Image (cartoon, rainbow, N blue to C red; front, side):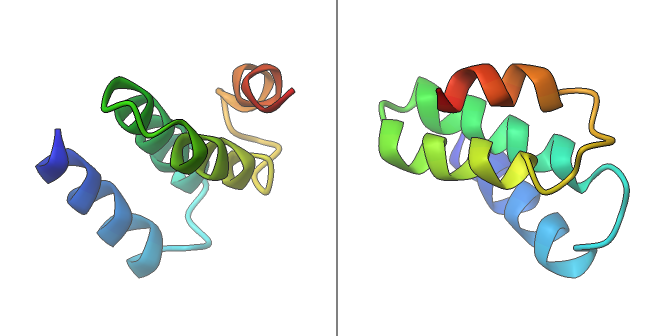
Length: 65
């Protein structure tokens, strides 16, 4: 799980304008939730909202409410 987080974080830093970057943030939120890191997961889900074209946008919006 920690390795996945590192990879996702690297992808978002390396390619912040990539159309699928929002998906990386969403998956980070899922990993962090599974690890019991709810405040960090919320931050990751909020980052998804910067990418309205993301397939997970609606799900992320529900998770930050």
